[in-house]
Image (cartoon, rainbow, N blue to C red):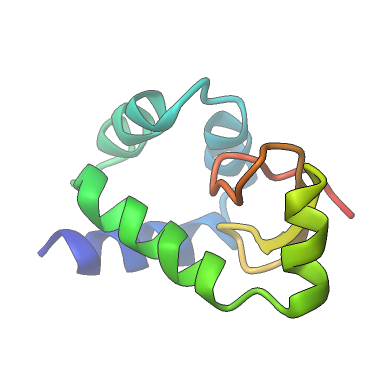
Length: 97
């Protein structure tokens, strides 16, 4: 059920700029899960982390090299591309490229 909820949340982010902004401002995954819950989505931390892991596995060699340097291109939750300044890709880092 939670994976479907995460998929629904990701789809909602395409149309709901306010929710997208709230998630972008989340300080950590726990805060993002709480924001999702307040928006009516029941998402487990494990499903969110699984989504993040899949995003990491789909990185190109160039993106992997950039991540070693602290910057990586990732797919943001709203489906657009972004960069993350963290040492590893994080769904909570949604800075435009």
